[in-house]
Length: 210
Image (cartoon, rainbow, N blue to C red):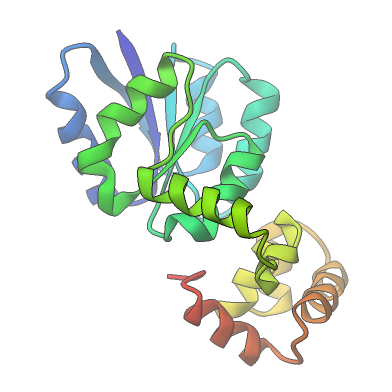
């Protein structure tokens, strides 16, 4: 039996995934977590074959959670689910330790196949993303500005773009406001921008925030 644990803060998404899995006789949803803290609490108590992880949840980011999962539960593969287009987040997720990446829009069609492939030891990305990644390797194209950021800088950039203040971001990430401002300076420098307004416009144009 393939025991699936879902970590997603959207109740409708959890119900949709549960419905999709209910038609598979060899798959069962053992639990659903609303946040990262709850996810780790449940992992300590349950026998889990695969984790379905929403990459953007309140509190700790999905990318940070992925790295922690790889350290604490390296034997449990993670399939990332996201509203964001694959080419914007998939490479970061795979580098952070994900075994696969699908968008929530395509989950109904791809979920079962992705789970089976990953549980059997493989990795999963859509055919469209695989072609896009191959094309990028062939052309060796220059990186987009946001692709030059570290994972933490990328996380902070998205929070600033979403309209959060340095203090709010500091509280969310459990760091000092001065640390956040240091990140902001680096981000603006790397992306060759001058203000949070520019960051917000860029993030919206590139579909980096919902």
